[in-house]
Image (cartoon, rainbow, N blue to C red; front, side, top):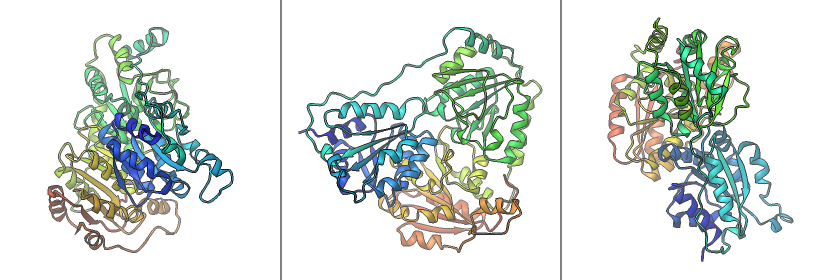
Length: 539
């Protein structure tokens, strides 16, 4: 007997999914067991929001869509934050929910509401699994989740359909589109002419490059044509940040903007490679005038955001688009930025964020970066530490620093790290979080305990919502609802089955990180005591 749940599970396995995350409920038991039988490991979490972030971590490690499961009613409602995050951060996520049958819902109200109506604004698509059309719906869901700008797709699974016998299933094949380069014509000719004549081109690269697997192609293009590269934060490492052409990530730090935006103003051509401004703050809203500087955009999907304008836009494959523009424009120009302006900005940025402090958040970050191997992965929670970390942290490869950058939701760093480590156990992983962010999701330390993952968690302890407190002071407002009591994190870690270490200097930080990275089983929580107002003037 082959059930609808079996077909759904096998399709996810065939798409490369090996993990699913969530919390059981009676309405999803059939689906959960089918996933397990198909070869997907199910991880029990303490909250659906964390489960969704773990699913995101597994996607970054494997390239396959994340899988999140929630039961009807409160389970679905709990997941709204992480579904919105997946939509804004372009995470392909298959969200499976249980629901009562339509006939039952007509006269039964306990825990029942319209899941699809709730999720419609924050998903790429929402389906109800239908008896007799399971393969069609699942193929659509996988295709939509991965195509264009990736994102979440919801499938509501009625209880009677999940266990219903189905005809012998046909193989489910999601649609894959061949790389589409710009078509010959006036637009391509215009772009080639603009590129050929540019003396100070600047390339902004974003998340869409990662979604298309175009990191190497974009890096090769930048090197071939000697073009400086700015990335969004989540796209850091598209060009290894040790490369002289890399200007690092942009969008959150006003201090970094003071160096980068004047360089943008000096450019005589701006190339946008999969650049999605959803990660950027207001300084990057219309940061150039297309009447004064030409802008060539190569994007995976049409833009409707209104945050910038372009002289010519190509929708399709980003690397193929860049190659078409660069390949028809003549030899690369060694004289790009011949005045050394871009190189000077790179040095001024490094000087602005250089850390020569004996101790503080920057010193703690530097010690971890020094000790984490090149293939290691860091995750960052939202808050003041993330802004400083994103500037100080050099990424030698893509997806080396993971965070919630579109929605900027708190409580993400630990579960993203856990999901990544599950899917790529050979990679060392460190999660950075503030004390408030960790306190939001303390229950997931027990999930970490049960998984026995050798993960290092660094929590910056300042007993404050530091970023909000900084903004409060900046606006001349009194201190209100930003400070809180201290938690003994090392004792908490020990009580929950991990190792806990408190540090307040570089030497102890280094010893703690080294021991945590050397551990073969179980988590290490490092409480870095940084004191109040440690981020003043830092970003």
